[in-house]
Image 1: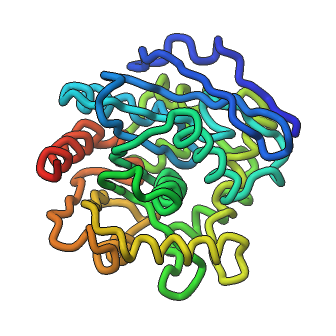
Image 2: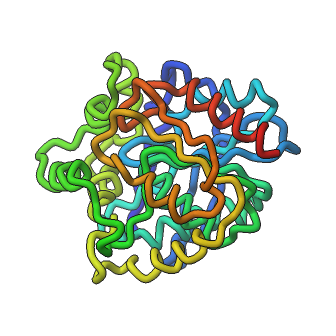
Length: 305
């Protein structure tokens, strides 16, 4: 497996990102090792909040949520997916699959960190991967909050939204794939140049963009997708998951509009919850309303502990 690693100097002086870097080596799946980056803030003996990012962002996305979560005494873990942020980046798009991303995060969260009593927050691919972690070992999780994400299986009842289909076509065909500009387009607020540059910092050459460019095509879109059966099995687990489960979707995301309805209807732990709508936020609600999202998580932990 050919891997590229973003030079450390590209991450110097990023605005509002004075967090200590942590690294772990995990199996690559082909006999080698991958170095994965994660943030680990707050008391080491506190129950962890696991913040999972999506496409084409990295844990920088959570810089405005982490201080609010820490103020409530929580431990916060925010990994960079393989191919993103400060984590290693395989350069061959064929390396990446939904199953591989799940296995890599299982190796970090379960095997290396051995997290228990987890509160999961996942957005975009952070939800698709995070929910697969949950359904693989549900006893490790105490509660779930999801925002602007889904768990599609490619069948009729999990049909992809038109907004997502448009985004997938864009990612496939656009000549210049610019993660910072893409994140900016997914926000209601206008990001400044320094923030846009921070989202581009991990991607130092064409090879480092392999994961970001291929990710949209890995979302199951039909019953013939390689992840279809795994997704159906995950939904079977979710249909028996009775621990607290909260939807906190934004009011202005065309990519995942309406996908919360299935969770509210079919996950036992989501029934009778006071689900939140994050007002004034686009797809990247962590950018538009990060402190507010963190307050929702803090409150949910308080009322369900």
